[in-house]
Length: 284
Ligand SMILES: C[S@@+](CC[C@H](N)C(=O)[O-])C[C@H]1O[C@@H](n2cnc3c(N)ncnc32)[C@H](O)[C@@H]1O
Image 1 (cartoon, helix red, strand yellow):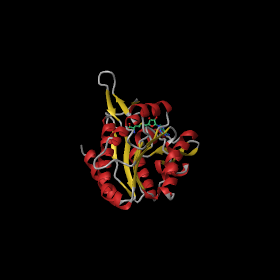
Image 2 (tube, helix red, strand yellow):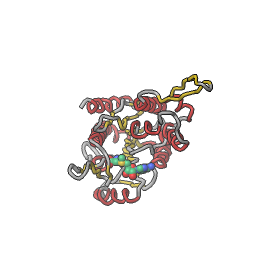
Image 3 (cartoon, helix red, strand yellow):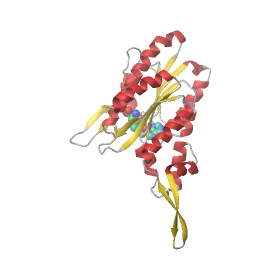
């Protein structure tokens, strides 16, 4: 069982499910007419159940996999593709969830999500994939999603919900004095798809301080790095997809921002609907 999450874990799943319902209602009108096939892709599927809290207030919530598989009205998806890298978690998912849906066409891939996003991009560009429309859920717990993977989905018929670890990931790697290890810089570069110089320039200011032994260049992290990383990621997403929502902001109990949750699409109406759902949850 996956063990993580605050109240936002539930809200995030509710947002996804509410959107999936709206998506399937619209697709229900057009799919048969245009011979569209509807694929649901979950890149970080988990075990199917999420454990929250400690001994006294322990709670198990149903993960997104089962919630999406349970949607029947107005119609289900035609196919489901789940990716989970950890072998034991993938096994638990199959045993406790997937095996109960033998009426559905489901694939579980026990591998890295980045690999499968690339394969999905290639498939959607192929003759066989042309009729497919995809709703994707990219829900990592850290910075596992590579920018180059998202590039594989550019200009395709994919609506994707993407969880961005702004507070949990990016901000933690951005050390105050800018002395970031090579391994962390590489992680940021792969995640943001930007070179070191651009990352440093965006998040840090440099000033010349006169000292007894001459001028020294002092590097300081700019204010509001979490918000800045969210804005940066959103603007990067806009380079790949025509439309990007405002974020749903996930905060922990101490009111610190952990993640920003976005939906991207090449369909204007899809993002309008997603924004309405996000605004509702942001205002709760
Ligand atoms: C936040 S949990 C997913 C929760 C799930 N979406 C749900 O609603 O129940 C993230 C999952 O991604 C898996 N994971 C981590 N890195 C991965 C990768 N590179 N590719 C695929 N899965 C990965 C973890 O083992 C973990 O089970």
